[in-house]
Structure formats: C-alpha cells, structure tokens
Amino acid sequence: MILVTGGAGFIGSNFVLDWLAGGGEPLVNLDKLTYAGNLANLAAVQGDARHVFVPGDIGDTTLLQRLLAEHRPRAIVNFAAESHVDRSIHGAEDFIATNVVGTFRLLEAARGYWAGLPADEQAAFRFLHVSTDEVYGSLAPGAPAFAEDHVVEPNSPYSASKAASDHLVRAWHHTHRLPVLTTNCSNNYGPYHFPEKLIPLMIVNALAGKPLPVYGDGQQVRDWLYVTDHCSAIRRVLEAGRPGETYNVGGWNEKTNLAIVHTICDLLDELSPRADGQSYRAQITHVADRPGHDRRYAIDARKIERELGWRPLETFDTGIRKTVRWYLDHPDWVLGVQSGAYRDWVAAQYGQAA
Ligand code: NAD
Ligand code: TYD
Image (cartoon, rainbow, N blue to C red; front, side, top):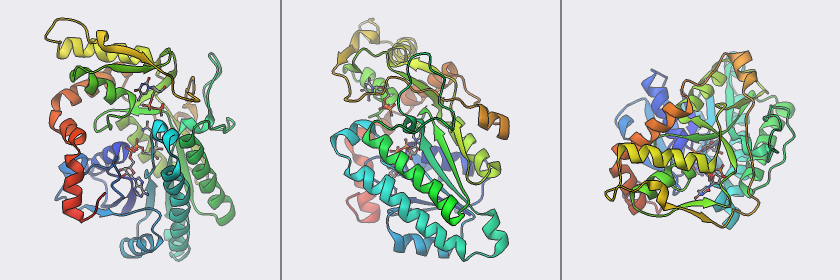
C-alpha cells in the first residue's frame, strides 16, 4: 500500500486513476479538499476497495501518525500543495502553511514511522516529493535548460515555498537518512486541470464567449508536459530512483503563451466552431502582466532518461488535442467546478466547509 497526498487535485487525481488502472497496489489518498481538490476527478474509482480516501491536512501530525500506523505504506507520494502562482501573489499564507510547514510535518511523521520499521521495510521505503521547475527561477532566451544542479532562484511566493519544501526534503535525507526522492517537473496540462491555470482557463473562457486574458506580451515561455507523462515519470522514479536524488521531468516542449492560446483557438475552431463563423482568436485580450513574471522555464530531462529510461509518450500536438477534446466532452465537470457544486457535495459528504 502507498500513501498519496493531494490525490484529489489535478496531477494527484490523474496519478491515482493511472495507478489503479495499471493494477497498482491499494492506496490511501489524503487530501484537504481545498478549492483545488475535487472528488469528481475520482468518480471512476469510487467503490474501488483499493482506493481509501481520507479528508485531512498534511499538517495534521496526529492524523498522519494514525494513518501511517494503520496502513503501513511502503511509500509516500506527496502532491499536496497550494499550486497557483497568481493566488500566491494575492496571499502567501496558505502556501507557507501547506508547502513549507505541511511538508515539514509530513517528513517528520514519515521519519518517525520509517525509524520503527523492520530493516528490510526500512530499506524499501520511499518518500517521493513532487516539485516544480519554478524553483530554478527564470531563464534568459537561449540559456541552457534547467538541469538538476542549476542554482535554485525562486521568484514567486509559490516557487519560494516549493523550493523551501525541496530543501527540507533534501535535509531529511542528509541528516536523518530518510530515503527521499524529488521530482522537479515542468508545466503540466490535461484532464481535470482546474480552470484557473492557462490552458484550461483559455478553453473554458473561449467556449463561454469570454475574453482570453494574455498577460503582458504573451511571449513568456513554458515547457509543457501532458499530465499522464508526469505520472509515468513519478512511477518510474518511485520504482528505480536513487534515494537522495532529484530528477527533472519535462517534455522538451517550449512554447510561448501566445502560441499556446493560438493553438487552443485553432483546435476549437476545428472541433467546436463559433456560431458566428469567427475564430476564437477574436477573444484574445492582452491584460496587465503578472508581477515578477518569470520569462522562461525549460527542463533538461536527460538524467531521468539516461538513468531510468523514462521518456514522454505524448507530443504537444497529441496532448493538446486530447486535452481540448476532454474539456469538450466533459461540460458537466466544468459546470460543477464553475458553480462550486463539487464543494457542496464535499460539505454534505464530509461535514466540513472544505
Ligand atoms: P492542485 O492545486 O490541482 O492540487 C493540489 C491538491 O492538494 C488539491 O487536491 C488540494 O485539496 C490538496 N491540498 C492542498 N493543501 C493540502 C493540505 N494541507 N493537506 C492535504 N491536501 C492538500 O495542484 P497540482 O497542479 O495537481 O499539483 C500537484 C503537485 O505538483 C504540487 O506539489 C505542485 O507544486 C506540483 N507541480 C505542479 C505542476 C503543474 O503544472 N500543475 C508542475 C510541476 C509540479
Ligand atoms: P499558469 O498556468 O498559472 O502556470 P505557471 O505560472 O505556474 O507557469 O500560467 C502559465 C503561463 O500563462 C504563465 O506565463 C502566466 C500565463 N497566463 C496568462 O497569460 N493568462 C492567464 O490568465 C493565466 C492564468 C496565465
């Protein structure tokens, strides 16, 4: 059995679905169900006895100790985080609480549990921390992509909180010998992506006839990876990664934001044309830039390929087409998110104002 945290969010729910679909062992899914946690993402595994959902906070030491003692996981995969840069600019408190203090509490609970395991289980145990390329800061045009030994220079409250958590994970290995693994991945996209992030926001706004807000000149570059490729990288690192090591994960897909928005508009023009015959590109509007906006991210993913044989399966063309199709095919999911109905259900089910 493994313990997954944040498994009701975008990447975590994709990971849980893939893990169970691939015949993976049972898992406990601990998620606080913040605005970003959505149990509708996990509808396909409702009733699957291998999926035990526990609403709760990675900062709750008592709960963590109970779950670890009860379920005796062989690994912890930590997705739980506050993840949206714009929200971190408006208020960083939750980012520090979950990404920094929460990760610290999870590490401490893991260490206590791991220390009490028999030697063979101790040797096999892994704590995998899911992190981001944003910890490395911003790249100049033409500069080499981020390798694992790139200097850590976070620029946003979000990336600073993730960098802090990465440092804690590293220290728990060096000081306490906890067998940790860290992955730093580039921007993900795909099904169940909350429509506050660039790609799902543009799809959802386009279909609703709303403006498509491009920050600044739209020439910022991100390196996009289809979410199931990120999930396969995590599974591979969990299986064969060397404790104490960091693996950068990316899709070799650098694109400007404007190019992304144009691609989405063109796909929608093809798959769901506007009634007035105009292109969705007509809805693009340039708005004020994000403060401190990182200009470029790019991942050098050669280490994970060389050492663990991992490569992405999707190209950007195949992944973005699947993604646009998924949003067109799941209007109920979008509606549930927009209306907040998924949160009402959580409150009814778990008796909390999550
Ligand atoms: P998300 O915001 O969609 O989901 C986060 C999940 O964590 C939600 O289900 C939320 O309810 C849960 N959560 C938040 N605080 C919690 C707490 N204190 N205790 C328990 N659960 C809590 O995020 P995501 O995009 O799925 O990202 C998952 C992880 O991957 C994050 O650590 C993020 O930093 C990292 N990451 C994301 C991307 C990306 O492009 N989205 C890229 C690289 C790395
Ligand atoms: P986002 O999806 O928030 O991911 P991150 O900031 O973690 O990379 O944003 C991706 C890029 O798109 C980023 O450069 C900011 C830009 N962006 C817009 O131009 N408009 C938007 O409405 C959003 C949400 C993002």
